Structure formats: C-alpha cells, structure tokens
Amino acid sequence: MSLKQIYNEIIKANNVLILTHQNPDGDAIGSMMAMKTIIEKLDIPVDAVITDKFNFINKVPNANKLLTETNKTYDLMIIVDTYTKQRLGHLSNLYDDSKKVIVLDHHPVEKEIENVNYIDSTAASATTVIYDLIKENNIAIDYNLAFYLYLGLLTDTGGFAYKNISIRAFNMASDLLSYGINHAKMYVDFVAFEYDIDYLYLKKGYSLGNK
Ligand SMILES: [Mn+2]
Image (cartoon, helix red, strand yellow):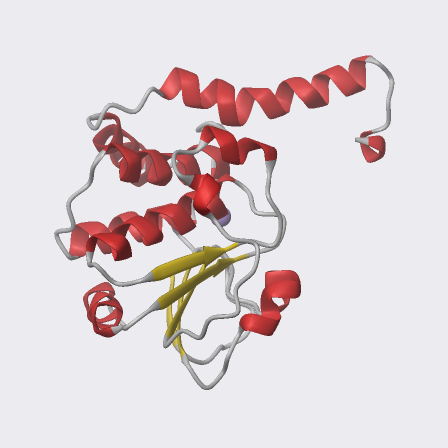
C-alpha cells in the first residue's frame, strides 16, 4: 500500500490507537508523537500507549501525554518502529486482529505479515518513513513535528555516526533543521548523554550488566 493510500485510511478512522515496541527508544517515541500530532491535526481522537515511561520522555514536547494503559476500543491501530506483535510486550493484548492495523516501520522483514504495512528497510529510522508520509501527502510540518522526526533520525543513527546515514538522511535532517531544531542540544540530550553514562560506568569498572 502506498503512503497516499495509508493516509487515506487514516483520514477515514473514527478513533486511533498508536503502539510501539517495549522499552521505547528515541525513534519509537518520536514516531509515536509524530503520528499522534498528524492525527490530532485531523481532529480524529487518538491515544498513544507505551509499555513503560522512560526518563528522556520529559525532554520530548508533550510526551507526558502518552498513556501506559487504555480500555477504550479503537477502529484503527497504528504500530510504529516494529512490525511484530511480540515486541509490543504486554501491550500485545491491545492488538486486535479484527480491526484495521497499519504498520509503519524500517526493520528488515523476516516473514510476511498481514494488514496494511509500509516497511522501508532502507530508511534510517521509522521517523524517516513518517517523514515520507508527510511529504507524500503535503502535511504541514511545525517545530514539534520536526522535533519528533529529528529525534528518531538522530537516535537511530547514533547522532549521524552509523552506517545507515545517507544523502537521504542528511537531506531530511537539513529540511528539519529549517524548522528551528537545535541539533547540538538534541545531541546532548538524546545521544551524548547515553554515551557519557556508558563511559562513566566503564571508567568506574562497573560491568555494563549492572546498569
Ligand atoms: Mn527505529
């Protein structure tokens, strides 16, 4: 299904549930918050539910509105940054095969899955897939949306250090910077911070397993 067709499915929804993998990372949270923002702008009720709160959530605009449970029913589910039910952790009990499911992911697919999927394993982050959805459907980007998209790209590339960087990734970064993203601050908040913790523990002689 194309990103235009996927957006048309989203527009038809009456209410939406967004899920991501357990132990959510920057790309998981960025992807969730980006989709939540897009759907809120359509005036469609939307909840995003995570398995557990993470300390960096306080550094992400409006991420304190993420839920850790829900008992509502939804007619559309969107799963970001994973395509397997297993990786949803205990939230897999919210996965309802009878409802429409849209998967937006960038992990290499090991086996075919049902439902509506857009999986681009050449994308550096799940937020790259969402960026493409935005561009394909002429959705307006504001600062917060740019922040969420950049968060996923930044963290899944290790601060533009990993092999998954590309002209495509830098073009996306360049576009997002034009909305006022502070790269240096986000690098410190979401990438260097983690490296420093690892360095600290190694220096003190703790095993990484004790973190
Ligand atoms: Mn990812």
